[in-house]
Amino acid sequence: MPPTPLTDWLGFNPHLVTLALAPAFLLAMAAEYRQLRRDATVPASGRYTLVDTISNLTLAGLYQASDVLSALLTIVVFNALFDVRLFDIPFNGWTVLLLFVVQDFFYYWFHRAHHRIRWFWCSHVVHHSSEKLNLSTAFRQSVTYPITGMWLFWLPIVLIGFPPETVIFAVAISLAYQFFIHTQTVGKLGWLEWVFNTPSHHRAHHGRDPEYIDRNYGGILIIWDRLFGTFVEEERTPDYGIIGQIHSHNPVTLNFHEWRDMLRDVATPGLSWRQRLRVLFGPPAATAAIHRERRAIPPEAAVDA
Image 1 (tube, helix red, strand yellow):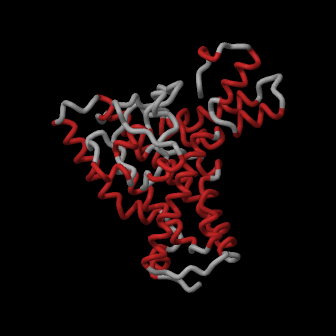
Image 2 (cartoon, one colour):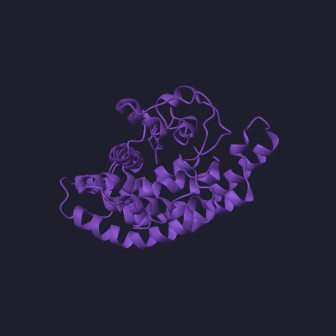
Image 3 (cartoon, helix red, strand yellow):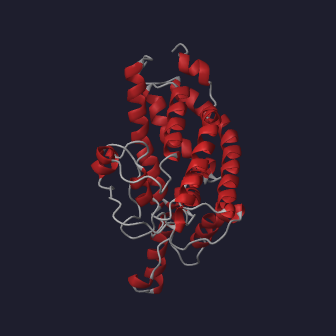
C-alpha cells in the first residue's frame, strides 16, 4: 500500500501526538488546579498535592522512556504482519472513522485484560494506585508495559489491513482523549453519557468500592461496556486507589510492588502447576482464592489483590 498523508506526517512515532498536545495538557492541569482552589465542594481526593503530582510526572517520564525502546520491536512486528495483511484498506474519511471504532473495540479488551489477568495487572496497577484523581493522574503509567506486551492487543488491526502508522496514531489519540476524563471538576454530560466515556464513567472506573471494581473499561466510547455487561453508573463519590493500597511515592516501589507479590505468590511451596498458572494468568483475586483453598480461610477473611 502506498504511504498515506497521515503516515507521511506521523512516521512511526506515537509520541508526536503526546508532544504536540503537551501544552494543552499542562494548560488543562493549570486550569483545573485554579478551579479546585475556588471550588470547596470538590473532595480532597481531587485536589493537587506537590508530592502526588511529582510522582505522577516521574512515572510518566519513565513510561515514555520504556515505550520509546519497545517501539523498535513493535515496528518490526507490525510491519511483518502488515506484509501478510488480509485486506488492502484505502485511506479515506470512512476508513479512518472505521479505524477509530475498531481501535476502541480492541482497547476495551486490552483494558479489560489488564484488570482481569494478573500478569497484565502488574503493569496497570500503577495507574490505579493513587488515592487521588485529577488530570495529573492520567500521566501515572508503568515502565513495565513493554514486558507485559501492551501492543499485542492491536496486532489484529494491522493484520486486517490498517497501516501500522495509522493504528499507532489511533491509539495515541485515544490515550490523549482519556487524559481529559481524569477529573472530578466535570459532572455528568447528559446524552453523551450513553455513548462516550466521560469523567463520570471514568471516576467510577477508578473507584475501589465493590460496586465500581472492574467496570467501565471503555476508551473513547462507553458502548462496549454497555454491550458486554461491565458498565456501572457513578452513583456516589468513589474511594480511589486499589485494594491493599500502596502508601508510597517511590517510583521503584510503585512500578514493581505487584510484580514482587506475584512472583512471591507463584513461588509458594505446595502449589500445583495449574495453581501457579492461575496465579500468573488468572484474575488478581485468584491468588487469594488459591491460598484460601490451601489454608481453609473463610471467604470473608480473604483480601482481593
